[in-house]
Image (cartoon, rainbow, N blue to C red; front, side, top):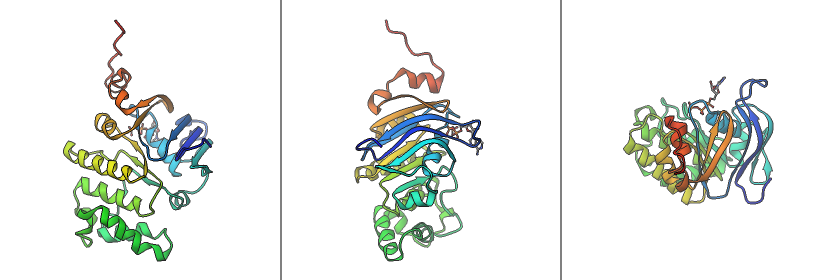
Length: 245
Ligand SMILES: Nc1ncnc2c1ncn2[C@@H]1O[C@H](COP(=O)(O)OP(=O)(O)OP(=O)(O)O)[C@@H](O)[C@H]1O
């Protein structure tokens, strides 16, 4: 695939029924170290797009590359082993298990001799979680649960981390905390692809944004530019873009 991309898709067609694809031919690139936000109105296919990349929704045509490797048809767990981590929007932690058990289960995918060390390095990144290893995950607040889900994804030391609406249902202050953590993780070298409805907050931490509409990539640009782009207001608020004077 293209030189210098951490993750790319070409002509990606995916969905739940072969004759009614939801993702309809998406070419997408994330460069190493980038934080890219995937925007678009409800039902645009954002979740389906990232699930197809992660391997939890069938890909009917096109390709997904992790670096230069074609990973299109690999099962989700093989993608994780190769460094493509995914935090789904729901059911991303085990509420009845403790914080430590949640991390241990995520580490099961690694060779045995690496597990302790990876759990320790993730605990070092999330001191709030590390302080209470025996607490049941179900007792955590919404924001802390999201951070546990992110911590679980980071266990494999991924090159690329994909998150599907990590801010869903969180208060604005907690959204700020979650996004600051994502920015820190990104600064440590992890490429991040973030699906978000929380446009303003996401563009504030992203380098670049892409806009999906009806399963196609219709618009993209630097985050700072997109934040003021009338197309965003049009898509989300139904406001017609201002005509040039
Ligand atoms: N499991 C499923 N089976 C069949 N169709 C589905 C399934 N999940 C989603 N869809 C359909 O796929 C389309 C795109 O949904 P998707 O969740 O990917 O969009 P989205 O852009 O993430 O929307 P939202 O912002 O509302 O989460 C919708 O028409 C939805 O009904």
